[in-house]
Length: 336
Image (cartoon, rainbow, N blue to C red; front, top):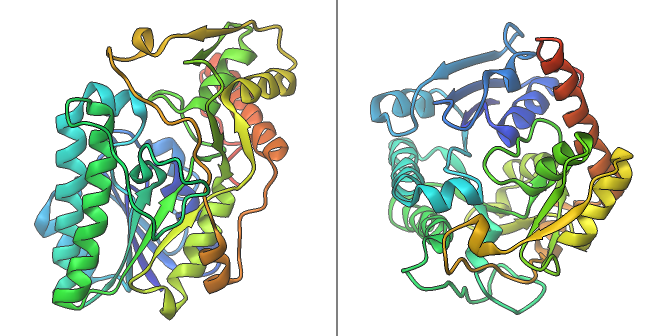
């Protein structure tokens, strides 16, 4: 296939591009490098079938050209990370909604398949665990920018399904749950790489809130496998799928596990949300996916254990630090 990936220099996008090339597909990547990095695709540049463009998913002529030349578009470009979302809500809303509109509009010209990446954030403050794709969503008040990301991604989903119904665009929607692994940066508030970096430096590991809130962390390798299987499954068109691990861990427990994996002497400290973010910041206590729909349609469910995930992230951060100390670029995680 010819596959076009928006946000392809990002964490998930670079891993997806790598897997597609390994199985013989041709890959075109577009990224504005606002949160992505050329380091993520450096090992792919020059390989047969791979090309990249530095530009914005808001650029209508450019996106139209790339969508037209592809068999399928995987739309990953988005504002990501709690820190970025809270600090730049205007950028979050405009980027997420407008870019999705541009991609879907281009796909509508020739009814090209689009996979729209959404997020577990759309479930908001729901306490109906595990989260199912057909359940009601429960977001917080508009006065809290924390919910701008969730709302913008929910609108992306509605827009995608509207393009399917009105314009015949085949779409698949994936809701990722805390996808982690090598190449992920903690720069925008991603918890696991942040913990790993702090632990390796023997700095205090900062846990926001009480630490009792829990999440399910899925390996990027499993997320990519889920994407690939859905892209190749005609019955997935028009559907929404959770993609993530079902192994739950408290954030405090995660910090302890990271510290152990890093062989660190770090102290674990609790930081009130009000000090980490704006006053009135809201969080959800649990976020656990039901992945039975994904398994039923594709035969696949994420199974990589948290021990393996934590080890991979710690080793990736260790590699980054060693490379930075030597003035180089960490390539050891490129094919992990």
